[in-house]
Length: 106
Ligand code: FES
Image (cartoon, rainbow, N blue to C red; front, side, top):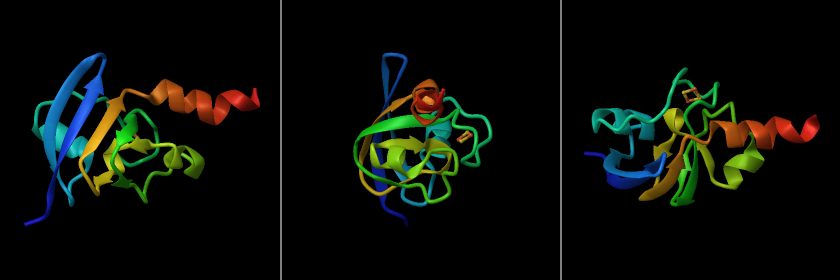
């Protein structure tokens, strides 16, 4: 049995709590729990599933769509994020990530 963590995800002002095993992506666990987090490609590229962690850490070594500086600030792509602790996060951060990665170069 893999270790299991508790995820508290805020989406559009609503808090959702579900559990997520260490070998399960946060997005997959949310889907199983019936929590409708945004997603599209499910392979770490498109950033639709971007979230900002306020507590906890994830392993997101396959997250291509978010650069390392943003990952260090707590941004994560939930479709390729495996929990390494209990998590608190704000989901639906695609626009924020886009702005942070590309906005400054325009
Ligand atoms: S759904 Fe595309 S990066 Fe996660």
